[in-house]
Image (tube, rainbow, N blue to C red; front, side):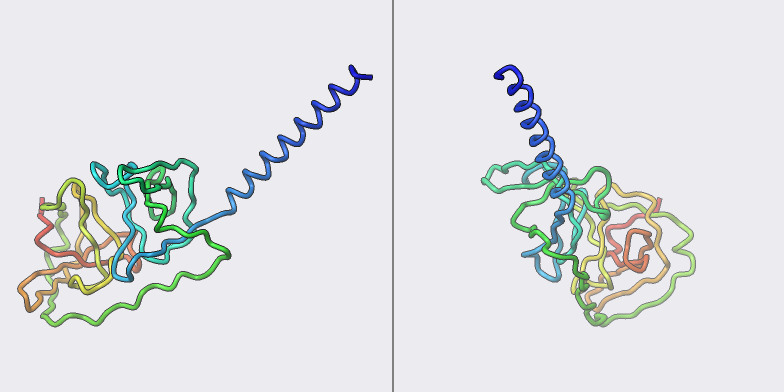
Length: 208
């Protein structure tokens, strides 16, 4: 009797283990997260490694962004902060790392409400009919930083995207705004941006 009972018990244990593993996998695939604790005019930086020192920004997530998937790996930064490796359609490649305190598990799917676009700052605007014929590259941005792309000309507008410090082949529309401060902002075109366009400070672009 003992010889017969052992393989049956082992089979039951194996089946339970397989079922538990299957349930864990399904549950993990269904859980998504959204960005929290980020100001309306700020973004959550996604980095190529755990922690801020020595890491590089590989993407950004606006406040309230949902549908974020925790891929499984986690780590602790030098200050003890918990970091998760995540993936999201806005993040290129295999994803990146964010501080876990800026993520919250989504209970149910809900539409993400974009922050309101602030009013246009004072200044003149005109169309340069030749600028769009050339390609530009990002200059003057530190290797561990990014060039923020905003919804309008000026830092009072929300961030809608970013260019890495070594970005090339940046296309501009030819639309240029000179603010009262003297700063010149240009409209850039990118399929990654809401509406396909955004604004950057012209001093960070150079024609090549």
